[in-house]
Amino acid sequence: MTINIGSICRRRIVSVDAASSLVQAAGLMREHHVGALVITTQTDEGPRVSGIVTDRDLVIDALARGLDASAAKIGDLASQRIASVDEDDALSDALAVMQDSGVRRLLVTNDERQLTGIVSLDDLMDAYASQMEGLAQVIRSGIVREVAETAPPVPPLLLRIPATGTAGWGQAMA
Image (cartoon, rainbow, N blue to C red; front, side, top):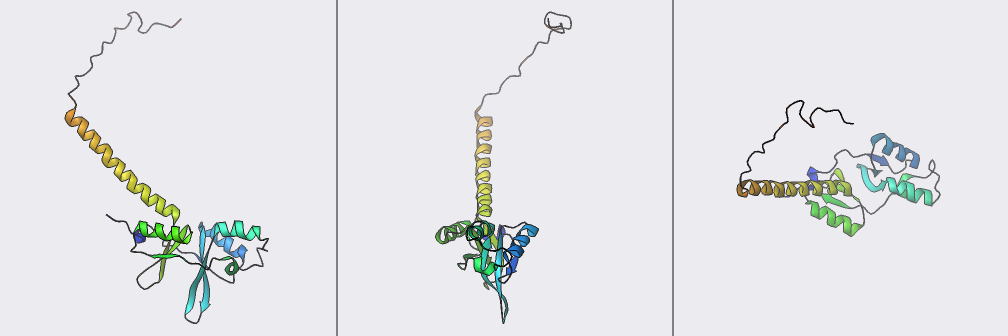
């Protein structure tokens, strides 16, 4: 069974207008507990995706460049290189796009190229880990079955319990 991106991506997308300040963008990340924001720009047809910015971009790039967090615009910091996958793509397709693009997050689109979610490297790792756990369970259950089928029956172990008052039982330790 192939897992598709649509089944693991996060459908809650937090976006911010490109004209917003870095402080406003950081506040949205904190409020919504996300590590990336989709940057939008207003057009005649409505808002359009114009980039993506991550918490790493804010910390590393903004601070390293000495940007004024309340004056700088998030659109100036956002990566214009937008990597995406279709929600019907396999995990391996998303991983290949991440490798080729050098990114850790991908936008997820539907057949009409509408944004439907976002998937992170962590999401892919969780999905692969779940598949590996399933494989491990198959191996363990096979071992249990093989042992049960081939092992000779073990007779019950008879234990002798000394009567109360005999040497070594109920005696106070010196």
